[in-house]
Image 1 (cartoon, helix red, strand yellow):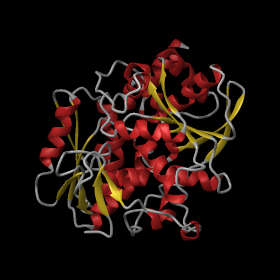
Image 2 (cartoon, rainbow, N blue to C red; image 1 turned 60 degrees about the horizontal axis):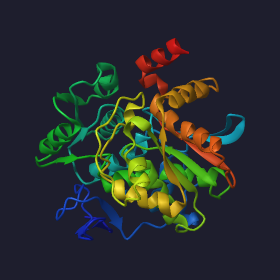
Image 3 (cartoon, rainbow, N blue to C red; image 1 turned 30 degrees about the horizontal axis):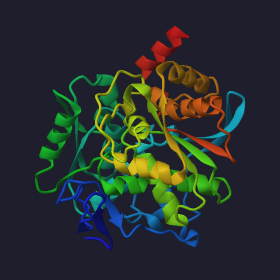
Image 4 (cartoon, one colour; image 1 turned 120 degrees about the vertical axis):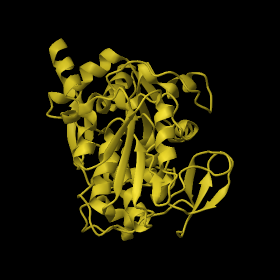
Length: 375
């Protein structure tokens, strides 16, 4: 039990703050911490170089051990001759932004006496949860699609996770992970569902706020698959001063799998599932994001929009990032590509623009070879 509750975004049902609860027990909807956590800037532990400097606004006490996650660099760069700020979340300990949510969620689970976590993932989330499970002495069981490359799961195995391949669509893989968690002492630790995971992801924008002199950027361009970074961004703004003054948010998705953009074009408040197409941005191939309605609402409140990035623009943009010394995986290039598309249409930012770079190119050697060979 905790000092907060969990409220369903669909039916409004209020549940006790149980760290094992990952979706609404009444309707199966997405949960959020209630009331929303607020941050007094004076409570920021400025001498702590990790994301735990924001422990006062995280649903977990600072753990005894960390991997140094957080406070990733914000560096000046450019795209098509225009200045931008790059937030280097690919420099986190396991090479992706997933460390933010995983570190906070696993610390919460460990403190609650959980002995084993299960997760469904084909890449970055598997590595992040495996690493933080190892750090806290928990067992990790990773369920991945049968077609996942061995290279992608090698990192999770190195941390000691038990990896199981599951035949069938992604929903079947998730169901296997959920079923395996129905044992005392185990919890389904979902990066796409768990409310504590998104609380950890909000730290990226809190860091940006500090790095820019305690002010918000004018706009942020964010790769979106499940959307935890986008939800986290809105949580960060709400934690400090509400929606007023926060950045415009742009959700960048590959055109081959852009459920937010399709819903936006239709003027819908809900996201209908769609079959994911082929794209190099495989980390964003999520045709039915559980938080779809929340993502659309967050974009509208910020004054932003979803951007569907064509494959040729994504490929060109990733190579442009590499030429600036930013060796990212293709999925991480979505935000930069979306920014380039917006500028070509004549969009003018009202101030500093932050482009979030989410995952390391060291994880996707095959895609890197393909991009280099076609250049």
